[in-house]
Image (tube, rainbow, N blue to C red; front, side, top):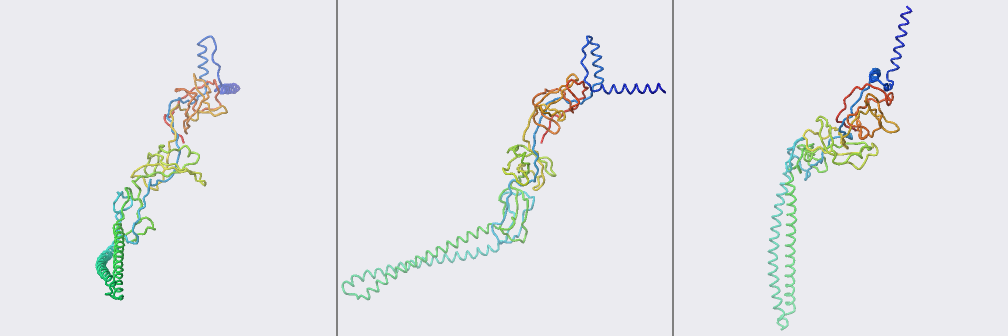
Length: 408
């Protein structure tokens, strides 16, 4: 029994000594014999800590800004009636239909306008007759004026010779003046008749214009997004538009961005939009709002997506706007240590750890771009920690490094 206890104690002592030696830095062999150095290295490697390492390799980095919002029309056209008070008798366009400029969307009743046009024709004929009468009256007045003037001129020498009394002379003078006034009245009557004709003609042009607008037409190419017109309803300009049209079918994302990231967004930047029910769509930043909502601290951007039949106005969309791109050396984010002297990584060379300062660039959730301090092909500790120090002996195990990454 005593021998068994002694054996157990010796085994435990050996195990504790082995655990103590694991992870310690072992001295480099300095003996005069190469075989002794090799045996020392082999023995040290046996007790070295196993660490995961990643190979430094080139990668492409893309910095993105997340924006969320709803799909809206690039330009929305409101189509309403140009004449009011008429009843809708036919609707020819429905929601989702693609229309072209000039297509008839709805028709209004025209019976009232046709009756008004008939009345206008009668008024126009009446003014024509009035003009003719006025012209005839002018001709008669001119004849009377000429006759009375001749009689008045003949009366002047007779009066001077004493062959005509003053009363007869005054009658002829008065007749000449009356004929002149009658001519002036006849001329004024012609001008009144012509003015009445001009007024009737203006009314006819207005009625003809209204009659030509009983067909509600599309002012531009596009897609009908909403139809409010109903057969039997009355056209009214102050009411809801009869139709809403997405001009040219072009849709864009009206998205919101946090104010801290709004400054990185510029017009013309590319974006990937995940539209509900459609998947990923490529777009371009068209507009960046100069205003930030003071209550939500969010800014607005417009991302143009173009004419895509699968896009639905009002649907939710999530955009990743590409604000910066870079190509450089990549290391796992877990391999970077941040201290007072700046970021560092632990490089493994000849199975020994070497701490090296670096200068980083774009950072993703998985990788960090290294712009200075490392070279292509270097091995770095994938999960750096404070338990490793310069000169520590390790046994590296490689892990894969992605070649392309994205940061937000």
